Image 1 (spheres, helix red, strand yellow):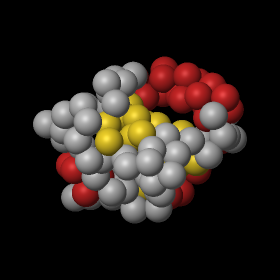
Image 2 (cartoon, one colour; image 1 turned 180 degrees about the vertical axis):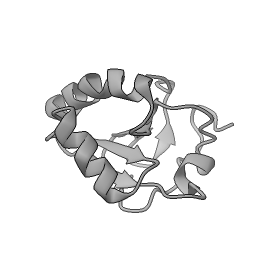
Image 3 (tube, helix red, strand yellow; image 1 turned 90 degrees about the horizontal axis):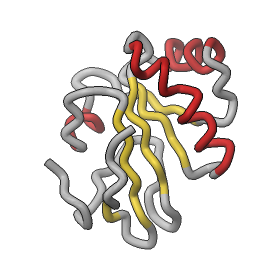
Image 4 (cartoon, rainbow, N blue to C red; image 1 turned 90 degrees about the vertical axis):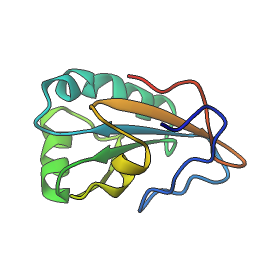
Length: 113
């Protein structure tokens, strides 16, 4: 398990240095992820370019999910099987949120959705 203050693992397609970044791990078929989607969108609207979805699905599915749940502000990147980002963050259930703090991306206590 990654602890508070530890170095945040890299996520393909996400720049973690230079600013705080919230990572929202989710899966499009997860009903809890679907319920949490509006909150993730609210965060993305409030903090542009600082909230990134990490979806355990192909890009087309992430795009369809974004359209279905009205999430135009949330940028998402795929984390395809074998789920390297989810495994690096020890994600065992979704949705889960982490905040990586700048200037060095250490993890903050905000680790749940």
